[in-house]
Length: 570
Ligand code: XMP
Image (cartoon, rainbow, N blue to C red):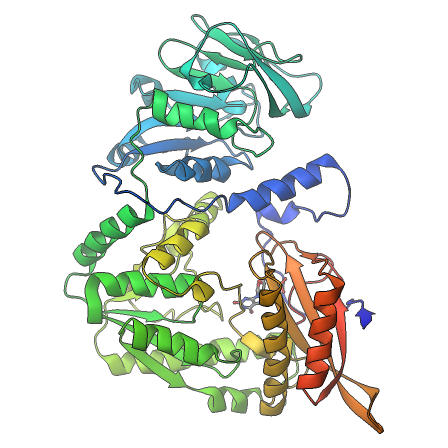
């Protein structure tokens, strides 16, 4: 097998870099890079526990994280939810009126890049202290508590970054119940506490930080280290202690309870109205359509547009799952000929995207019109999208994520949005999907781009090329799944290049297509690393493709990371 270096120039317009865009790929051994990657991997977190025994649904309780801008803030929320307690991330200027209905049982103040002495440094809103609910300040959050309650924070002369050994000492606290006397913790701070506020006690210390953990008898605590990252092995115990022993939470955030609550909410919101959704077979659109269907039955119609660029068996599987197994109302439109017609002679990647995007909207609108009066458009917006759009200044509602992602759904449609998953993390969505009876292969499907195979065929898209690529892609998927690598890879697929090369088969000389195989690991697609697939898996993929796809006589493996490459080839 030949190793193929991909250095193709990309014509694709790059989207606005998000704060995450600065994350680097694991090309260096430096500890910061590997930490980011490990933390990033952890963002998806553990699987939310499927409720084995009935958990009281009762009134939903919440822990509120005040986000001071730390890269770990979402991770804190994720960790709390892993403890089966609902958690939301809010900015420091959120008014109490917005928080009270969430039934807060305690607050966590996140870390942040700032210093309490900077002008406009964000502070803890007064209502948090006035509420008398427990407060846990982490890193910057601890410094804010210290600053506001009469202690002293000093600019650190040198940044403390990395592992430290924490020793329990001073006063015993339920915050450290079941934590060993000495344990590793992860530090990442510049400023440090010089003097504790009055009435605070030291709960734990490290060699460099005499005030590594502090607390008072009003249940206000500060941690200099980060309990939310995996480098603090007892971090979860500490968070759990805070949530259960100090805030007194019951733990009623389960996906079963979420589904029950959602059904009532959807029924109330939709009333007798009609909903449409664009079904793509991806996890978000599948779960959103299924949960709405569970709530309002045939008041939802799913429009499934087959643009002809889907993978082998994808249409049948999606259709069977929803129509036959779930009994959902599906409008299936086979528009593949129409899309192929529009793509005739087109080789530029961006033009392909544009054509597919526009045509998708045309087909979707045509079909929606046939349904008659519709009131709501279902969207698979998730919690990280909501947080990202809130922090980027636009309102969450303004950022409409299209699950088909091929240019957005019709701007002219004056429909209300129905977004039942907007408070869920991706793993929670998967769990909801499983609890709703969706097949595992759908719930765990790797991301697949809206324009589909069209951007994995270099050059003009034709029916013949689509068939070749489908056959090759089938082999890649099959072998990756057999090797049990599918879930740990962000994406794995085949690309049909426009290169032909000479080969030999029996006594014949061949001149066949070159297929490339791409398999990457990533946490959010902003950066990606090529996967070090075992040689025997690569060998099987290569052998099977050249044996099973007669038009292909050469297979190469793409060993470039993103950046400088992108995940897709076009
Ligand atoms: P790149 O190739 O930019 O891809 O590294 C990053 C992620 O986005 C997916 N992708 C798309 N998804 N429409 C989509 O819905 C598109 O036009 C598109 N282009 C890339 C890609 O599969 C990867 O997960």
